[in-house]
Structure formats: structure tokens, C-alpha cells
View 1: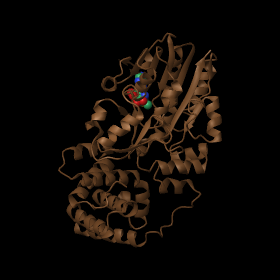
View 2 (view 1 turned 60 degrees about the vertical axis):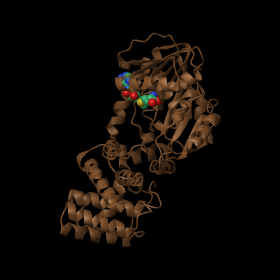
View 3 (view 1 turned 180 degrees about the vertical axis):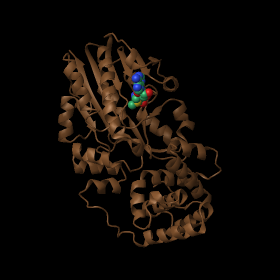
View 4 (view 1 turned 90 degrees about the vertical axis):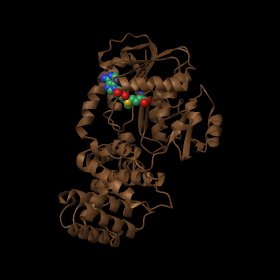
Amino acid sequence: MQVKEDTKGTPVARELALNILYEVMEKGAYANICLENKLRNSQLSPNDKNLVTEIVNGSVRMIKHLDWVLNLFLRKPIDKQNPWLRNILRMSAYQVLFMDRIPNYAVVNDAVDLCRQKCSKALAAVCNGVLRNLIRERGKYVYPPADSIEYLAIYYSQPDWLVKKWVDEYGREAAQAMLYYLNQRVQLTLRHNSLKADRTTVLQELAAEGIQAVASPIIPWSIRVESMDKSLEGLKSFQKGQFYVQNEAAMLAGVIVAPQPGERVLDLCCGVGGKTTHFAEMMDNQGHIEAVDLHEHKIKLLKTNCHRLGVTIVEGVQKDILQIKPVPNRNRVFLDAPCSGLGVLNRRSDSRWRKEPAEIAKLNELQKNLLSVAGQAVLPGGVLVYSTCTVNRLENEAVVNDFLKYNPDYKLEAIDRQVDFLPLDQTDRQAARLGFLTLLPGKYGMDGMFYARMRRG
Ligand SMILES: C[S@@+](CC[C@H](N)C(=O)[O-])C[C@H]1O[C@@H](n2cnc3c(N)ncnc32)[C@H](O)[C@@H]1O
């Protein structure tokens, strides 16, 4: 939980949380954008800003669980209630059920005040009654049977179709572990930039700047931030380009693609260059990387990132990959395909509610087309790596297997040695020996990610 011990927050903070929650749940605003806009110019203390963020993100993330519990105590279902009452109940239930720091009496008093203000005295009485019952009966709620899909979907607050998909594809135990991880606080991790400093130096600089951080126990080039009370962008170590903020699963692209100094590399779907800049580091800034993305603003940010990190071999290109007619002249091609992002649902509180099962089949088509273009750019003997940050076979193994079917000059290539520092279990190590690395969210303490490495004959 993000709320500090010494604060239960001010009523102003809780009213702001309600207004943001209302925008997100009733008007379809994006939670992260709305939070950023409303908090940027607010006069709230840092503690109150944390409180608003926690209440909004937590309520949005856990809304299915919250609505299910609230419906136990409402005469009319929650989706038929007055929209203000509905959201006051949700954020109050979130504070009671999922936060430790705010006393129940303060939650109820505040909710009743807000209800008087936003709705009516009569609805304030309903609000009071519902919350008191919810608090009194806590621990006695009878959830659906523990072996049902419905139970997992309600308890971990995720769409039913997604829970069913993961239980079908990966088994119930693995699915439950992923669902648990995706509700935990995101671990902030930094990739130290080997062009500028080694990890020990960066850790020392961070400590001198008041940031508590430790070396990742898993990834040799990762730093885990344990606590900080200032923005990273303001740090001297950031401005000197000593690190890049990146999740650990994404930090593996470097060793899986394994680009060498002097090579010609094509990075397709480069985004703002998280992985591109890692490739440049591994190449010791020698050779050439063409980095392509559809969006001009991403290419601009890529250039800014390269500049800060001291990367000089990247050429950022704004282009639709599907329009490229490639020639086979690259040693390595990397495709980080657009995907459903199911492995990183922890990163945005509302993203789970914006996904549609039909989207996965459409993405599979796009991914196959993109991989077909990527494959044409690889020199004979060169390497092709496909990756996504999602977890389902249709967007991952199925795309690669389809490509291999139509491109017999390609073969999967083992990646277990490249990632021998990962504590992979037997099944995952076996798959890595074949050329597939699937990181289920949380399984190795990182977000979900998929990699497949192939070599052209
Ligand atoms: C998974 S993200 C890439 C993340 C990036 N590689 C990184 O490490 O930060 C997928 C990217 O694909 C880009 N994209 C989607 N369709 C594309 C297309 N047809 N041509 C070029 N880029 C595309 C999106 O703009 C997005 O930045």
C-alpha cells in the first residue's frame, strides 16, 4: 500500500479521489492521464497525492471485487444506483477492504459527507447503512466456489474471459499466481547504462542522491529502487545518462538478441527505445541500429533517450513496417510486436477493463504480417527475435510457428545459455533450449514477456 503510516489523508484529498474516480468510471477517462492532470497543479501534500493515487488506482483495479461485495448489501444492484453514490461506495469499500491506514470510522464519516454534498440526505443514509453492514460482516462474505472461474475473476478482479483463458492455457495454479502478481505494487527497476557507468557506481550515486536502491538479485544489469521521495528525472545520475527506467523482463531483450559491436541491426517497433538503447550499449556504440516505429512522437523520444544515454549509433525512423520492402542485409532483426499487453496489466489500473478477447485474434494477424516483413531483412546466418509483453499462445508461440511453417530457411535457436542467470524451472528451461522464453507475470518476480529466437539458414 502506498499510504504512509502517519496520514489518513484530508477530506480534500478524498473528494479529489472521488472526482477522478467518477471521470474514469462514468466518463471513460484514462486513470493515469486523469490522475496526472488533476494532481499536477493541485496544492495537496505529497502524502495526500499518494493517497489520491492509491484510492483511485486501487478502486479502479479492484472494481469487480468491490461491486460484488457491495451488491451483498444493496437492495438495487450497484450499476443501477446513483453514479455518485456508486463511486463513493466503491472508494470507501476499497479503503476498508484493501488499505490498512485509514480507520473505518473516518472512511464512513467522509463517505456520508460526500454523499450529502453530491447526492442527497436520503442517499447519505443508504451509504451509511451499506458501509456499516459491509464493515460488520467483513470476513463472513460467501464468495463463489473456490474452484470456479467466477471466484478467481471476482477475487482478483479481472475479466472472466481472461481468467478462463489463462486457466485453460497454463492451468489453475499458474493462472492464480499471475492474477495475484498483477494486483501487487509495481517494482521500479533501472537498467544501468554500461556506456556511462557500472552498476556499483550507479548504486553509489543513487545512494548519495538519497535514493534507496539495491542490485537486482536476478539480473546483473538491473537495480531495484526500494524507496524514493523525489522524481528520478531530477537526479544528476539520470541527467548524466547513467540509467534507463525499464522493467526487468524487458531488460532481457539485450542478451537474447545479443548484438555485437560493428553489426547492422534492425529494431522494429522500437517505441521510445527502451530495448534499442540496450542493444547500442551491448554493441559498445559501434555499428548501426535502424530503429523503426509508426509514431513520430516516439521517434522523438527515442532520440532524446539516445542523447541522454550517450548512444550514437541509432537512426530513428518513423515508418509503417507493413509498407517496408526489406532487403536481407542485417545481422540481427528484432520485432517487439504490438500486443494485448496481458503480461503488464499491473502497470495501469484500468487496462484490464479495456481489453477485449476479439482483439487477440486481430493482433495475431498483425503480428504474423509484421514478422513476415522482419524475416525478410535478415542476412543468411543472421538472427531474428520476436517478442511481446503478453501471455497467450495465439500471440506468442502460434505467431512464431506460423512464420516457421512459411519460412523453412529459419530454425528456432536455443536461448537457455543467454539467460542462465534466471532461476528457470525445468519446463521453462526446456522451452528455452528450444528457443522460447515465456515469463509468466510474477513467476520470476518480473512482468510477463515472451521471446523467441530464430536463425536464418
Ligand atoms: C510493444 S511496443 C514497443 C516497445 C519498445 N520496443 C520498447 O522496448 O520500449 C510496440 C510498438 O509498435 C509500434 N507499432 C505498431 N504498429 C506498427 C507498425 N505497423 N509499424 C511500425 N510500428 C508499429 C507502436 O507504436 C509501439 O511503439
